[in-house]
Length: 583
Image (cartoon, rainbow, N blue to C red; front, side, top):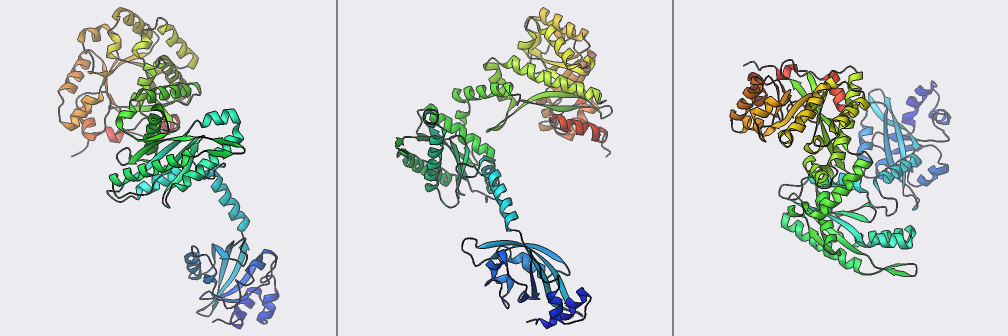
């Protein structure tokens, strides 16, 4: 073991003093009010230490001379300490040390090491320890607060989703796992009638009972309000995952059957439980939660106090649609419905000349809801016109902002058949343009074919009015409806949009008959053509080589949020992508 005298010359050289080591050890290098100083051998054994005072006294027996420091370091930090001993010069590492105090068994320190050399030999290290327990504790408390529920101290929704996502990524092939979504029946009645303080006690007791139903690998979280989530451990197969989920669900129902005693009252709360299973219901943590949530509402609709596994049929049930419709109304009211923009690229020069405004809804629990789903909900719920107005107003305002920033990008907004049939459509449309202060030339109105056929004379007058404002007109999803040369000649259409189903055939079957016909029809009528859903290079090349004017699709860019699009407009050039490939 390195002796104290062996450090003499090294310490004296730091101090500029050739005197004995005892002089060196009395200098400020050694003594400190805040820090603890150690001389440690190359193998990590304590050769000497400064006086222990204050909080350092907790290490009185732990850091005795002759003890190897690795023996008193928390096992999770030993590897980092040994790496520090192999360092060539200065090194800093955070460690947890075992103390002599049961109430505080670990002390967090930052260790700074300076190597002591004698000629070509490493004598050991001068180690400065600084207590950072309070800082580390505060950081841990802050992390806990951001990942856990204050009332129950359970992981919160976001933390459970993160843990489940990590678990799903590590699942071996063929494995499965389940998520349980639990809602406490009648809790709202208790909360409203007896007060939140009583309700809080019930939630705490319920969370304690739920814990007793789980195994070591299961994760319990509070979703919010009176809802809880359970992520079960890994199962070897789907069948085993189903069995585990049903076993736990039955156990929970039994636990909840007994009354909750709060002060002098015995309160009865049951549970409705929905089950989602990976991978049959979803491959993502959010998807599993969504599936379990839907199944839970099926249980509620059937009388509560039970459980059900998710099935595809549940997704279409009326009660789910009703609930989503109500939440869609809320999204409109609080303006959480989003508008994204898919770039439209010219096949002549590769420039972004336009964008299509598309509605997006990120549900707070279900994640991204498919546009086809929530637009049908809006239609059935009588709020489709409100959604139209919301999206158009946002899109026109954003277009005006891009115009002020110097971007020559037109925004395409979708006009629904119901909207254009409104008697005051033209006045409303003009007022929207004026409120947004956007140049009409920077706007394109898109309609589906069927919108042109019902009440053709009235629609023609309105579209002529839109054209008179300076707005271009486009037929969306062309070819999927009643494609007639007569009405194409009759209406003042500028653009035909080739539907993505026809574009897909260019890749899947090589069938270009319908695309060729639409291209020929559009060119013959003097209209410009844009193809939707371009996802492969072969599709782009065919369209460019056969006279299509523009494209949009995932090959070039998905629908982007406003800020993301602004970045793309500043930084992205598509000219190389749309150029013909050289064989």
